[in-house]
Length: 296
Image 1: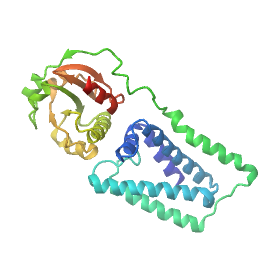
Image 2: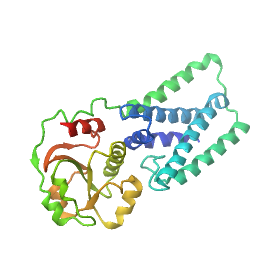
Image 3: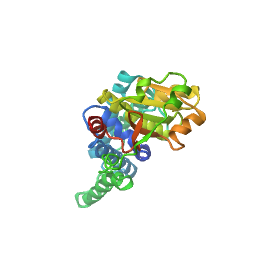
Image 4: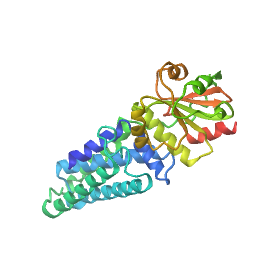
């Protein structure tokens, strides 16, 4: 059980962004606080894992913490199934092990059952007061570890708006003439739009798409458009994982895609009247800064 918690925490760290977005997606935590909450939750998993492996203070502390965090994740998974269905990867083991929300819910229920059995039959070791400093050390180390291994970037959100504008024209005629699945609207050439070029099989593109979906849901006034590259058979898997099928999109393959996006994915352009003003890394993509850009 301890190894499961340690593995679960570690796999969420790399990449950590999907786990951060989970808390924003719940609707009561903003983009700035989510990175800290995500790391604290991972730290809690580390703490529970270490205490379980060492068999320390099980009935007094460890079992209660473990049951509490599993119940929290169960509630989240039930909400996820109700809102978006049993689709995509729930992220319980990051991107290391793909699990649907229902599979993860069943896993958590089994772990809860094991906890209740352990609570009844396995006591472990209760540390004397004179050794309480060990608990303090384990607690502090576990909570700090996610912040050390994957530090929070505090100043990324305004990075692209503080840079000089790119100001080069994007040849959208290549998109209009060669796209398939859906015909891109000519209105992409007018006004301000965020055009994201993504590969259907690229893991970083899927992380970017999940972030864009949450921003789009929180502010539908921001115009997003996906230009996707890949085989049709991968389209369903992409949408099941990212839940972005409601965002306007088309498929563009081959040299036409490379001509517009290059070879580094994902490529996210802030376009104003067919002029790329900013070329944004998905890590730097920030809802507040996008809203400022729209008002400029």
